[in-house]
Image 1: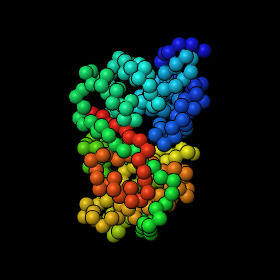
Image 2: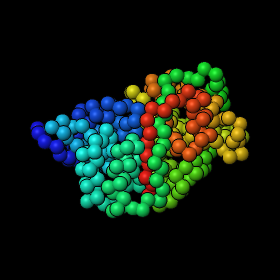
Image 3: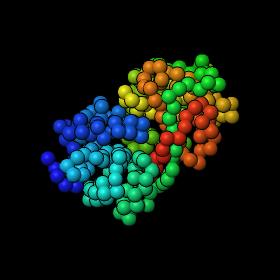
Image 4: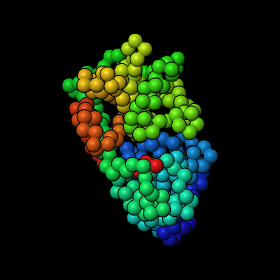
Length: 281
């Protein structure tokens, strides 16, 4: 038993303690919790290490160190420890993302060593809802994407990613990993779209899933169809599937400068429950 404040890489035997920390904030921690539920804490299956911070012998804070660096329930002491470990290891992630306060502190410690970042998004409202909107009808044409529609959905996914992140997901490995991720979402029934004459008009996916909550991602409307409020009726349809089939709480996070999207999500019933921050490399 650890009796002082310290940090270490967690092992499979630490799973229950790690889940206790993750489940203390099921909405904010949905992304990492969903990965841990599937892969446990084995780094090979998890796709990265899970660092743990112990205070007085109790695990109180985590940091997922994989393709993303994600502080979880991280106190200032924990952030300092995680930053030092990350600095020594060197940057292996493509982004730092998580609750705004801890992520800002983590980045302030790492920026002298890892900076400059390609982009820093300091406030991304985290929004959630438990209910369908009362006055917006779900779009009846939004449905689950079929497995034989990968060639139809992929261009829309690539367009959304490039527009949102600023780089193409096809760079590097030619998009193999990204295509595999999209295929996984389609095969598990978590990719939704309105498709007209072979064109994706609206799309969204449910990326992270736990028994407590799920998180919508990749919301996109084709440029030629914007201004028709399709995002609202489309999101209402995705909410219908999510709340009925997947989890009792649905969340998402959005850039604070994306005023139209924030307004649309508010109209569909989402309310702000926190804020994220992202550092993109």
